[in-house]
Image (cartoon, rainbow, N blue to C red; front, side):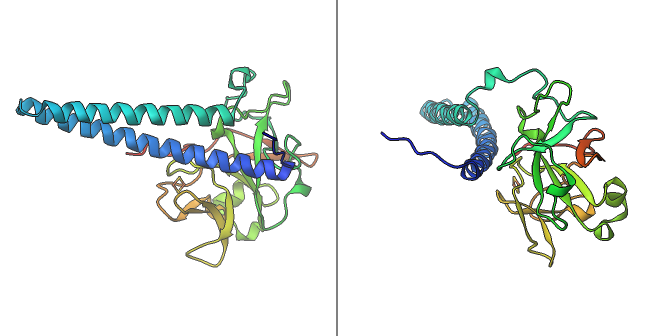
Length: 252
Ligand code: FES
């Protein structure tokens, strides 16, 4: 069968969709596990009270095993396609951003290149980036929790705390939704206002980058973690650890 090739832009889009699907699947899988554990517990409790229902126990257990195996197989497959060389990740590539790390594009035509002031259009959209160790040149892309959104906004639009953390109106946040851990991929007009916001397309949570990425719509329980940044010689770097928790809450 002939193979299909994609250009860099198409491949980036496919990668983003794959990451989003993988994250959504993972969240739903966690929910499934939690639900099944409760069902199993309830069935076990009931059976201990009534010895006449062994078949219910057996069916519950069989269903649980079947679903678990199917889900694990799918998860394994997704993992393989997303990162065929997971065993080859270099040391440091899954560590959280470190002070002094450069910020490089995580997708698109410029993937791997440093993000500069000139790459950030005033008013958005955001750029997606990874931290990169300048000493070892290791890009910390082995953990999806390291993906970062960088955006440049009018400093006068930022609230006091966000402005204090910004550099020439540039601010950076974790790209991982605090709801169930999907990547935040959209920059769209808010459902509850007339300004553009970060949006997670998994369950439509919206975050306002002008106000410390606080949640303005949707089920997300807390704001995106902020990442202090510095600007030197036109390039952006990490100035400190994430402020706030990175990643989604445990579903269930
Ligand atoms: S994962 Fe649910 S809104 Fe983002």
